[in-house]
Every structure is written in structure tokens, then in C-alpha cells.
Amino acid sequence: MHVTVLGAGAGGGLPQWNCGCANCSDARSGKIPPMTQSSVGVSLDGTDWVVLNASPDIRDQLARTPEFHPRALRDTPIHTVVLTNGDIDHVAGLLTLREKTAFRVAATAETAGVIEANPVFGVLDRALVSFDTIRLETPFEAAGLTILPFAVPGKIPLYLEAEGIADDSEALRAMGEQTIGLRITDGTTTAYYIPGCAEVPDWLVDRLSDADLLLFDGTVWENDEMTRTGTGRKTGARMGHVPMSGAEGSIARLAGLSATKVFIHINNTNPVLQPDGPERAIARDAGWTVAGDGTRFTP
Ligand code: MLT
Ligand code: MN
Ligand code: ZN
Image (cartoon, rainbow, N blue to C red; front, side, top):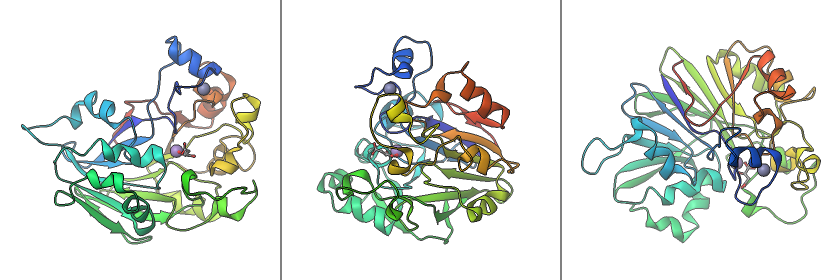
């Protein structure tokens, strides 16, 4: 299996257009590598590709990644785009993929419904771009890979939220079609892709035990990171993202997995982005890799 990280960043990317935080400033000055927004390519043979989430940066991501270049006058190696939620950083790139070339979009009925409800996505010619509804716990085939969608704790997209959701609301870690994880296998090797996950319950730890490669939500280092960095008021919990650190964080909760563990969907505020910082050392010592744009794996 071939895995190419197209964009390792969370919504906003690194640097985020309006952010002068330490990480964003360092990315502008070339001290740390910039990151585009959340997307990963997977392929059985390195020829036909499944793109996991279509980020607003997909045009640049495809242009700079040779395995995604057209092989004919009008062509794409993209066989299927799978959506794990309806967030802007995961769906807006579909608008870039409009220029009359066939591919398939695979999404849950709930996420597909969000897209269908917005007329701007009508630019995708449905004679060429098919929308396939995927079901929780029902595997589907894409370019020779078998992909199993399953619910993980998470919330609906930001732009559909009602006012005044409390930080401890159950709705922020609901189980359903709104936020899914993907188990991807070629029959021998198994990878998991979970870019958004509000908590790591025991059942999820058990579920991931057969992973050879785990690409997991690395949005924030700690729950109150945005207040600490002065960049905002929202907690990780409020955004539907479990922190890396702490007793209930992903590093501690997933410590027992034998998989190659990789953080993706990393927010620009996350101190783990500093290569020489203490947080990076903690993650590395716990067996985690912090993905960057263009990081490749062949599990
Ligand atoms: C998230 O992952 O929390 C969302 O992408 C936030 C957003 O819509 O910017
Ligand atoms: Mn996101
Ligand atoms: Zn920033």
C-alpha cells in the first residue's frame, strides 16, 4: 500500500492567513515547514489513487505531487474521493475538481446530504462525478483497496452548529455518520485514517489493534491550547478533537498499539510542530511521527 500525505495541517493550514502565532510566524520565515490542509492519498499500486478528504489546497497538493499528475490529455489518477466529515477543510476541494473529468465521491448519507444541500457543489457534473453513499460498518471497494467506514466520537460541521453549545455537550462527541474513521486494507496491510476524533474510548483502542499504520487526529497538544496561545477561546473538546497530551489524550490512550503511529490534521497552534521543542520529543519518545506535507509511507 502506498500512502502520501497531501496536507498534514488542520483547517487553516500553516501559516493560517490571519495568524501571527509563533508557529505561523516560523512557517512564514522558513524556520519550520509550512503545511497545507488535511488530505491523504492511498493507493494499492501507486497508479490509481483514493484521496481521503478534498482540502481547499488540493490544487497545489496535486500539482506538486507527481503520482497525481494526469497521464493523458485530460485525466486524473484519482479514482475516488472519500469524505470523513463535512468540514470545510475536507470538502471545499471538491470545487477545484470540477473540470469535466470522471471520479467518484464516497460519503455517508449525512455528509453527502450536506453537500447536496449546497447548490455551489452543483458545478460537479453528475454525469461524470458520481456520489456513492457509504454505510457505517459496511466495507466498500475503491481502486483495489477495501475501505471500512466506522463512526468515531465527533460533531457536525462548524457551519451547521447551533448557537451556545456547551464545552461538555454530548453533541461534541456524538457517534454517527457525521464524523467517521476509515479502515483501509489491501488484504495484507491495514491502515487507519482518523483526522477528527473527540475522545479515545476503550472500544476504539481495541478496534485499532490490527493497524499497521495509524494516521490520527493531531489537532491540538492540549485542550486549552488556543487560550494559552491567545489565538482563540475554543477548546479542543469544543472543536471535536482529543488532545495529544494528558491522561485521556491520544498519546497515552494509544500507547499500547504496535502500529506505526502518525499525527495528521495538525493545527497551527500545536507546539508539537516545533522540531526541537519538548512536545515533539515527548511524541517521538512515545513512538509518534508528526506528518508533514509530502510524507510518504509504504505499510
Ligand atoms: C475542524 O477540524 O475542527 C474543522 O475543520 C474546523 C473548521 O471548520 O475550520
Ligand atoms: Mn478540520
Ligand atoms: Zn498560527
